[in-house]
Length: 315
Ligand code: C5P
Image (tube, rainbow, N blue to C red):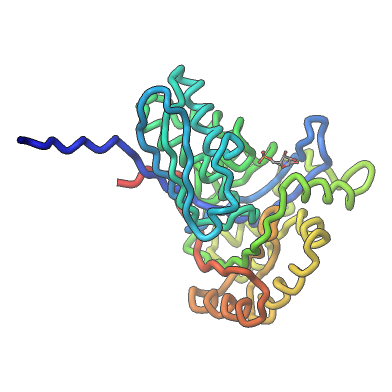
């Protein structure tokens, strides 16, 4: 008797990076509930890995997750990766039948766009699995419909973002920057942080970012082009930091500990609560991480570097 082994279902693996906003300038809330942004994203080498596996027709989308904070990640239609698979299927007129496995490499709900990276990776993975023939531009416009940070997770490297953060222009950089992140067990909700930002700004809002010209970030852009980490450290900026600190005052200490450890800059990453510190070297990043751990100022620490590549198929 001959046993024929069942052929494994085709699957593809994709990496997409987390990010830090080197500068995040936020205007007054608009009628659509969003805030106009002028931001500079940098992708860091902490990757979400999404495996998309073909399943029988009619099976629908399923999600499984592993990684340090996997239990915090929804596995239903509220997961941005699920919505990405459905949006792509609808766009090409196919059924959204796919098993998605998310291996989390970016802190969950930390202001580093890990969920957006899952969505970007899912778009690239399902695009390959279903052989849709869509262009990168098509994927980028689908990405923008899914969330403000999803297009950047597709693009990676370093880029200026305007609009809701979804209109991107690549920025030139030299060399490698060393980062260390202090993540907290309890995330912060992005809408809650923007809501507190509005409260702090008061009626009429903050100085609106109507003109997305980056006049205020000239020094930052120069630092990136020169590969000058000291100058970059001085130029880091986050308009959401006061809002995140008012929701989580203990992050002040996390920032102070990084400064005491000689960080070139330390601030809240995106909408937080993750704190990002820029280090002189990988060794220095490890030293800052050790200080955070010794002081109990982080629930987990993540040493990495940027810029990193955008969503990409793995062999
Ligand atoms: O676009 P995304 O779904 O990631 O945004 C999540 C939430 O963050 C929005 O519902 C909104 O409350 C807030 N947000 C904002 N302005 C932006 C981006 C996000 O107010 N530019």
